[in-house]
Image (tube, rainbow, N blue to C red; front, side, top):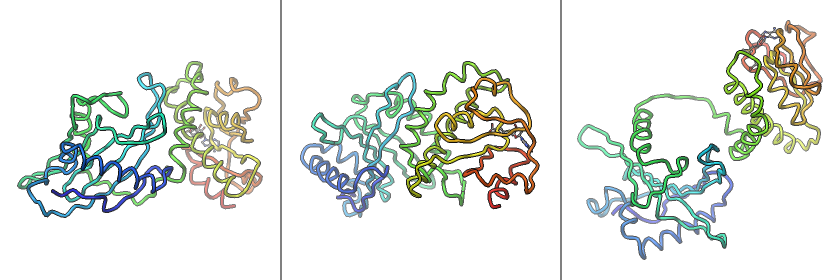
Length: 316
Ligand SMILES: C[S@@+](CC[C@H](N)C(=O)[O-])C[C@H]1O[C@@H](n2cnc3c(N)ncnc32)[C@H](O)[C@@H]1O
């Protein structure tokens, strides 16, 4: 069949050396040869047997999944898995990894699943297959219910496959480590979640609190990396132009960054933050007097008519 040793190996997630992947793959491949003929057949995909000489090129990625926290998964332990992609046979197989008490990592044979792309006459088909459904244990997050895989995920995959969304932009999330971002986001979400309960504005607290928590998490990581790169010790200062409810200013100040926010309209919630959060009511009219030369970072998040002026002020 079209199955052979890894033709190409890449490492995803950024925190695992390539040698980890090589030794994991070697051990797993040997165990397949030894005692798991069914798993070998599952991995080989539909081409196995029909085209004995078919070439095979596998790409194997070792990646870390950072689960969302939630009532069903409060601990959110990161999980590692091998993703085996076989472009020629149209399959990608997800193999969960388990670590024993001695720190040895090996492939688990339960919770293995595969996405398969196949063509029959003019039509393309996508299927999701579970290896050994009777040993599938859902946790509702990393390992969803089979019904979710078969109904929701399959429908989304089909939709994404025919969509043609081209974007020339570099993903801005890739400027920072996703693992660090997720940890900081979850820590800040926990720390500032009570703001949702006391929100005095008419706007939706869930939307605003978590959006500002997410922006703060992003900036805190970006600034931490900037300090490391430039060998700075003092935390960067900022000014938020058109700061609205001021929550972003409040979080960044509480996390140790000196800064202030300005908005043409004062909000009720400003009075709840305490004196360490500096918010000023005032209209910014772009001119030589509104350049903020002593501030490290200018922030403008959906700042209405100020938006086009933010890069102009920053350049000056
Ligand atoms: C869409 S809101 C965004 C608020 C906040 N940045 C956020 O992300 O939730 C735009 C804000 O910019 C403020 N604003 C617009 N023009 C301004 C100006 N010239 N000077 C000060 N604030 C201004 C508005 O009062 C409004 O609160």
